[in-house]
Length: 175
Figure (cartoon, rainbow, N blue to C red):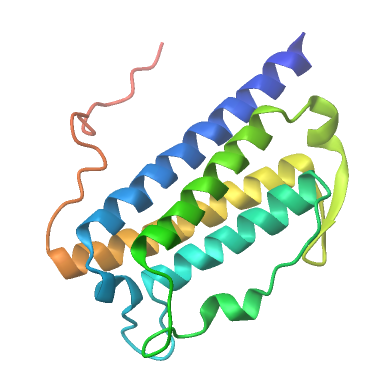
């Protein structure tokens, strides 16, 4: 009983955080022009577009290949190539792939069993449990979502409304 409840809570919370990040990236991209999506501040920075391509690669390698044993065709180094001045995917193509990949990740996460969570897999040279894979993907997604949000805020000089309608000043109440 406890294992079942814990399993459901792990999956539920992971899906919640993953979905929140998905919506936040969508909101940021809505604020940006096509040129801003691919703009890099300097040679050590990544564009929003490159970060989205990188997230897609991470999701496919960790969730689809790692958890579902699909072929791993990721070419990680290509995710960071500056795409200014060369053919780059348009906003619709980029975001369609991002949405399709996110939906596939959520579908896979919803079907993860308790056995999947404790089974170990080799992913990107690391030995991770299914839980470790999911935790890595959600944490990695949050990290890059923060970068995308920061770039968007800097360009637009405005709040992105991630917490609109929530009072974040409410204090915790102890029983």
